[in-house]
Each structure stands twice: as C-alpha cells, then as structure tokens.
Image (cartoon, rainbow over all chains, first blue to last red; front, side):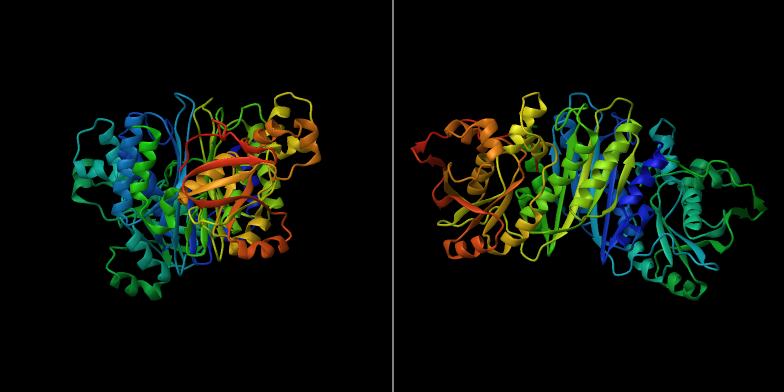
Length: 305
Length: 305
C-alpha cells in the first residue's frame, strides 16, 4: 500500500463534511477549526536544531493552518515523548514563547515515555474558531490570487542555517516563522478560497487551483521581496523562481473576486494580487519579460492528510 | 529535569481554566471536551500486537476520556507515521472498526514519514461536546463512589495475550476495550466528579480523592465480577485486589451525593456504589472480612499530562 493508498483509505473514514475530504488545511466543524500536525526528528528537523525553535515551529505550523481558515486560536494540545531532560526543558520554553506570542493557551495533551534513542515524533493539535472558514477548493474562474506575507525568506534562512553568510532576519524567518493570524481573519470573509503556503508558493497555489478545478496564471514579479532577501539572493527570474518554490514560509494565499479588490487593499494587511484563476487546468507563469517555463519542482512534495 | 518537573513547566503554560491545570482526563472549553493521547511502540504496545487492535485501543482510550466528561464524540484527528504498508493498512482497518462502533468520524490529522525502523509514536485527538463535564477534582465529603463497567477483565486478558489459557471474552476486553460513552453521558449530570479507570481502580479512585482533597474508603466486594473473570481468576480477596489494581479497563468512576442514589440506579447503566468519600486524606479498603491492608502498588504508575 502506497502513501496515496493509505490516505485514500483514511478518506473513506472521513465522510463527515467537517473533514473536507482531508483535502483542506484543517477540519471545519460549525465555527470550530481543528488541525493536527506532527513533526519527526530526522525528517522535519534535525536532532541538532535548537529545541526551542523546533517547538516554535510546531506551534507556528499548526496556527498557520488556523490562520488559513480565518480562525482565532482557542488553544493547543501537545503529544510529547519524554527524552533528554535538557532538550525537553528547552522545548517547553520555546513552546511557551510561541504560545505567548500568538496568545494561545496550552489546554492539554499527553506526555509519554519513549524507547531510549528513538527519534522523537511530536504532535500538536490546534483548535480555533472562525465565523467564515474558506475552503481551499472554493476558487472561482475569474478570481484573483492574493498573497499575504513574504515568500523565499525561510528558504534563504535554511541556507543560512546550513552555513551560508546572511542576515539574521532571514534565519529568523526560517527558525521562528510567524503565522499570519490577523491577516487570515481579515481576509477570510472576502475570500472564496484560502490556504497557507507551507511547501512553496507554486506548489500550494497549484494545489488550490487543482482542488478548485481551475487553471491559474501567476505573475512572478508580483510577490513583494524584502531588501534583505534581495541582498542575499538577488533579484532576477532565477531568484524569484527560487523564492516561489521554497517552503516553510507560512504566507497565505487567497482567491477572491475582483469586486472585493478594493476591500482587500483597504484591509491594510499587505495582501497583493499575484495571479488569476481561469477555467481549465494547470499552472502558467509569467514576468515582465513574458512567459516563464514552469519548473519541474514546484516546492516540497511530501505526505500529509 | 524530571518528568514531574516537565509537567510542572507545561502547567505554567496551561493557565486557561479550560486546561483544568492538566489534572483532568480532558480539557473542557465551554461545551467542548478535548483530549489527546499518544501511544508508543515498545511502551504502550508491542510491534507484534495486531495493528487493528492497536488502532482500536488508541481510539477507545481517547473516547473513554470523553466518556469520563459525559461527552458525545464529534470526531477525531490522527497523527500517524507511515511505515510498513501491511501494518499501516491493518491499522486503518481497525481504526475504521472502532470509529464505526462508536459512531465517530475521522475529521483530519497528519501523516508523516518516519526514519526507517523508528518506533512508531501515534497520536489521536478526540473532540466531543458535553453540557455538563464533571471535573475529577469535584468530589465532596459524604459522596458515594460509583463504578460503571467492570474491572480486572483487561488485566486477565493481558495474561491470556501473554499465553495463559482463558476465555476469549477476557482477551477481547484487553484487545478491544469499549469506552462507556452512553454510561458517561447518563451519569455526568448527576456526578460531582467523574473520571475513567485506565490505570487501575485503586490508583484512579485514589487520584480522584486526592484531587478533591478527601479521604476515600472502598468496599472491595462491591465491584461486580463476570462469571468469566471468576472462573479465570477466582473470587477471594487476592483476586479482587488483583482486579482492582489492573489497568486498561476503561470503566468509569463517579462521585455523587446520596440524594441522587436512586436516580443513578434508575439510569439502568449498571453503576454500583463501591465506596464513600470523607473529610481527610488517603485510601482505605475493606471487604466482608473487615479491613484490608492497602497494597503498595495501586495500579499503573506512568507519565501523563
């Protein structure tokens, strides 16, 4: 049984409409938004990564799923295998920093013993509430694609974490991403579809188009770039493609009809129009020089229900 | 940092009243009841255990926490590390059987890759609703201790799983425990305190007494025993002590004032009075022969927030 088979079988158990066929960032049950993410040592982080940053990221990843559904966090539950005391202590400290930064209480969870030396698998469940939780499957032909937040900075930060010289703010974008909760809540009531960008702008935008049964054209020049990113990674087409296919940014993308463009700009959340959905299928790219060949690798491909 | 220290530090992040100081079976946020349990290969189950039973038990353990708060399940989220395809397939099948048996949909979750050969750590979050979710800290002096469900059968089933000769219904009680959801919903409105018995009647009842700041006396003869358990394990004081200190039963215990005794009996959920809370501290045991020395080991001691 392949991973795709496994998820297909899970989907057969997920017939409740709240499950959204396991195709969305989160489950949506009435006004409740529920998400669970797990990180694995040696897969999602390295044993040598600072444990406080691992905890921060686990919280940020889950809260970003809430942001993508326009939700205000109500709290989180932690599933944690006890191991090295110093590591565990630093993990709790980082978790506390993240939960304080995003005003989210720890509500419960489970701590368990683990076989000595076993790679840690840590789970976090986040619960939030949203009066209007846009589905990633809801884009309509003619909608604009909006981007809130910046892309490519975490990818640059990863290169810095691996030894490249670069500004600390890019490393911070990788180590301590900030879920766009305020932006998500502002955008949700105006959006036909919304999701977070965790695996790369191109791959996640293509997923939204695919889930909505539409084609999508993206203007590579439209995503804003910070001076730090431009200084570190340059400015040309290759640099923009690199930013659009790097993961871990936790920006938000939303599909919205042109009637609400002014309303979205008036929100003041820094959302910019970067593309347009049309009838059809597939992803097309362009920039000021014209059409851009779609790269073979659109972002991080991995498992995930 | 010891495990107790770790939980103390988590508790410092769990200041929201919904967290119940991480001392209850579940978090209670308005009418929402939220719980997360994790099981670890080599700790909570053996790699050689039938994967369908592992899945069933993970679901049952979480749903039992909902039962203990009088909640009706709304759904579950799964955190699952992909591994051996045959094992994973049998796991999903068992999960489907449990969720169907307890009328609970899968709402979402996460599947992740894991390093080859790493012990699995599988998490499940269960969400339910309860109009009245009794706290385990709520027993009052003068309350009776009630037991719904049977004790000792899963312990006998474990011995059978390990090779002893015995009836299949006891093995089933161990492999496929049934959370007492109906009983929990019926008892909750009448109970001052309620919790499930997962680590052994004596240890869990002592925890309720301790959390409520009370002493507790238990009549060892009062817990009902099935003919199968009596045939397998005998009937005397030693057999009753063994049943009262065995884990994995997922019975419910509740504290309730004598004014509601008739109402509890009229529920028809098979709850029986087995003890009484009084002012003071500590656990005392008696049976038809008089006072019974409290055993040193009251049940399973382990970590858990």
